[in-house]
Image (tube, rainbow, N blue to C red):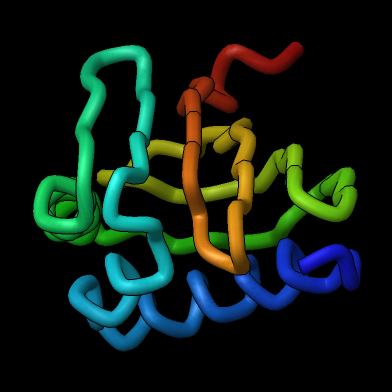
Amino acid sequence: MGDGNVGQEFLATQVQLLEAGDTAGLAQCYAEDAEFVRLDKVVRGRTEIKQLFDEYLVEQPTIEQVEAAQITDDTVLYQAKERLGGREVWAVGTLIFVDGQVWRQSVAFIDRASEV
């Protein structure tokens, strides 16, 4: 790893795979012992991560724009405007990579309607 581009490449790949509905392909980008943490649940391993993305796609997500991202050799912190189940939300999360795969991810969806 260490090239500083794995995070940027993953963000682009993630959007492409989600748009294609390829949750199996997306799950393969995660380490076998990966954890995905949201405020409402924690899932572990590729099978559960695929199921999480299958559930996510039911909400017909549209990633409008990645507003901000801070990327280091192994970590991405991101904020994206998204439509999720008809709601406008901010997706704010982190990704941590080990050997080019996602090892840990967290995300929180914050309702954009509450913006002043």
